[in-house]
Length: 149
Image: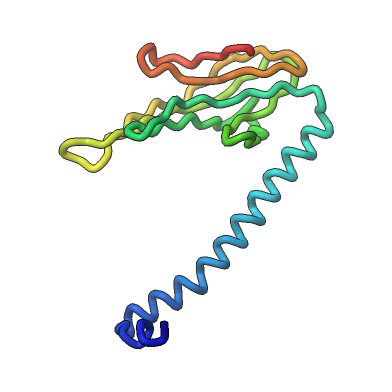
């Protein structure tokens, strides 16, 4: 191991040292950020135990990467959750205005990636207590779909 370190040129040693310093700081910062976000969602859910769960479905695969971004719920930050590898957001019962956008990326021929982004739009969603829903974007129809489970 020491021989390998001695074989690196000084510039590479500096890069490795900087990486070794920055990476733990980044990991600790990300961990604290995620704990705070999770804590905010837990607090919100304690205040609204009968909230509806809305899962986001993007239908991504190895070639195509789709992203459904929830920008706001009633012009406020959404309460995001992650469960079993899926993401979603909570809403209380009633009618809400959800602002969301969708983008789809795929490998291109002339360019590295080709990304199609749909501008943010507002949809009116009606939810009931303790129910689970799926919120998705149909690329063929270019419309958002809201499905109750």
